[in-house]
Image 1 (cartoon, rainbow, N blue to C red):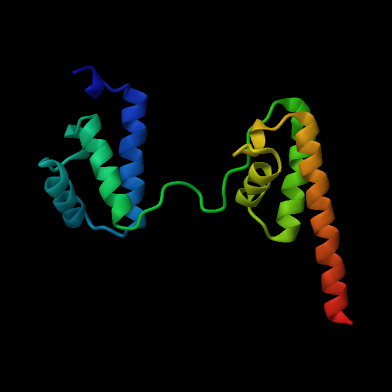
Image 2 (cartoon, one colour):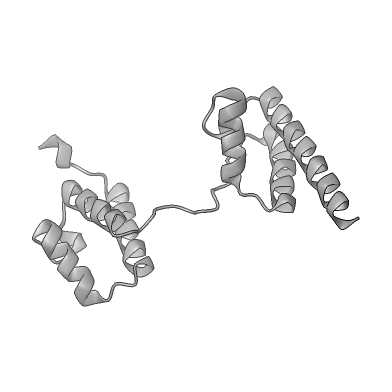
Length: 146
């Protein structure tokens, strides 16, 4: 079965995900092993194949676990984009917004789901749009204070 062949690093990552989900769902060891047995028939993640690991992750998501960082992750860029990226990150922080907001802007402005997929020109336009939004927020705050 070629579908069940899994690279060791991918396998370790999936087991780590399961352990993170166990912790975030506040499952004690007995509840965790019961879930493994119910879903896969085995009581150890180390004994699971690819399908079993995926089934356990799906079940933990069904129970309410969400993978990933809710704030979004800063994109990884080539060095020429890093200064603009740093400025965007500072603006987002000042506005109390997450990287997910910037990803949403990239999607609506340029049809690209992630900021890191933007070219230099688009990245600069995104930064300008954030600057305009930042100015509006400042004016709005000054108007409310008066």
